[in-house]
Amino acid sequence: MGGFQWNIISEYMPLFVEGTLMTLKCTVICVIAGTLLGLVLGVGRLAEARHGFYKYFLRYGVQYPVRFYVSFFRGTPLFVQILLIHFALMPVLINPSDGWIVSGELAREIRSQYGAFMSAVLAISLNAGAYVSEIFRAGIQSIDRGQAEAARSLGMTYMQTLRKVVLPQAFRRMLPPLGNNAIAIVKDSSLASAIGLAELAYAARTVSGAYARYWEPYLTISLIYWAITLVLSAFVQHLESRYGKGDRRQ
Image 1: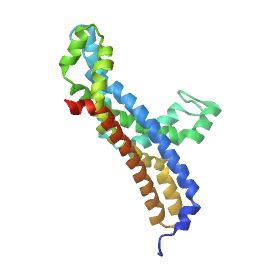
Image 2: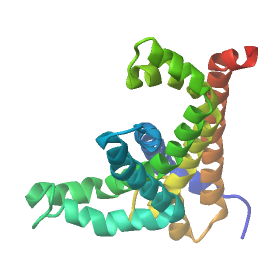
Image 3: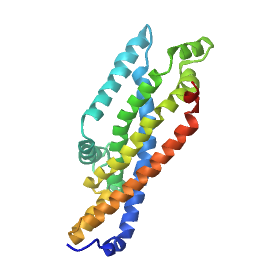
Image 4: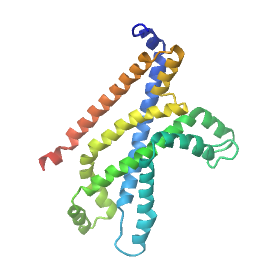
């Protein structure tokens, strides 16, 4: 077997760099999209009205569909979701012959150039949104209802109360689980190598296939993933120390 062959890493360094950049790009987009989607879903999960048409509309038109969505994406493997979206959903939406959204030569070019990236981002974002929605739901519910009632009594609308009173306080408490979710997205992006996305796991698989060696490529990407998660963890801790002062004084 021999020792650790650094020449393999140096030879394929551009591929590892490209894979790292792709992993970071995918992570940033999925974290932002998943957080925004989770916010909408979390608020929708808690939306309610006391009487009238809106009571039943929010219950059956918003709450129940959100619960089904969260249950499905949390109850099925992300790997299966990626395959389902890439091989089943995307050919329906973007297809050269009869795509629902894009067709013709443009669809062919999009599928060949960005198909794997779009599928991975969509699948991971939808999956992350389901988990983040529960983080937002728990964070919002952790705030004393009296504060929201006091804000409403002052004439604030529901959205104003949520944006100016509830969410700023809940955000401090949600930082640790949101950070953990972002770290999970970094690692989950490796599943996208199954559909040909040229990220870190794909780079390692390419190198191991060329040399039939596994220590070098997989140890290398392990260290890269570790470095990314350490930096992300430090950033989250910085945010906690900066925005969590209010809770520590209580």
